[in-house]
Amino acid sequence: MTVVVTSESFEPWQALRAHEQSLAQRAKVGACAVFVGSMRDFNEGDAVHGMVLEHYPGMTERHLARIVDEAKARWALEDVLVVHRTGELLPSDPIVLVAVWSGHRREAFEACRHIMEDLKSRAPFWKKERLEAGARWVEHNTPG
Image (cartoon, rainbow, N blue to C red):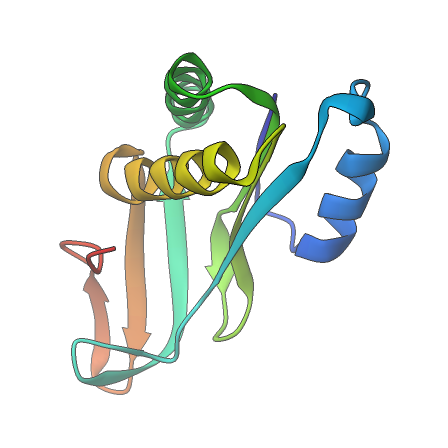
């Protein structure tokens, strides 16, 4: 299990490839489900020109690890990778990568969705969008 919160930009497919090459139990892996989330250039009917994504260092990583641990207790998973971006973001920048490896596709799909939905609804991140008319804090995430 790997959880990374970074202010550096990242290339999701490169991160996925690097992590996959390090898997120790590759023979047990029959499926990998992947979700990549990028910054949209719209929200609540407005054009969004940029965003600052804030978090509490340490607390956020522990929270994400707890979400992953919950998924590992619920499904038979071989490995999980979560990479989440913070700081200044522009439209189309990758924000989050969730990858789940398991013996079967059902577990991989269900666990990947569970981790992503919990991350969006419970993890301590705060978004401040930059609009034409100024800035605003995002009060809630879009529903899954």
